[in-house]
Length: 167
Image (cartoon, rainbow, N blue to C red; front, side, top):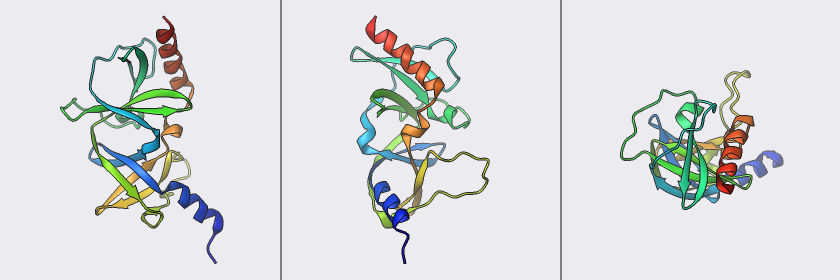
């Protein structure tokens, strides 16, 4: 007899994902969260922010905080390339930019192609992982971008952007 709760959970994870790369690994975020994809532009540093808060950008008159996902995930920083870009996502009514190495494509990932995230060590917080998508002979880490971008540090960056937007 199938676990109905687990089946419902997987059903909510299926759908269209924008896939991108960080350090040669594939990640995906729900396309419904994506507002736009932009090339790299001038980023204004904001004092006293965590290392992973790159700063803010002015996007058509709106100031948006930009998070470097490599640094947020404690990966080695890398040089910017022509493929480095910013994905503007919406989380809790706020627009936030996430800097990634490269955007790949939009994939429709079915329920049957999603596995639960691995549980290796109970001290590791991987609650931001919705599951592991299987597509084109690759495993794609499906992220809950809202979970990744929540927290006091991000609130501070969003508040700084809100102050800039009202100035």
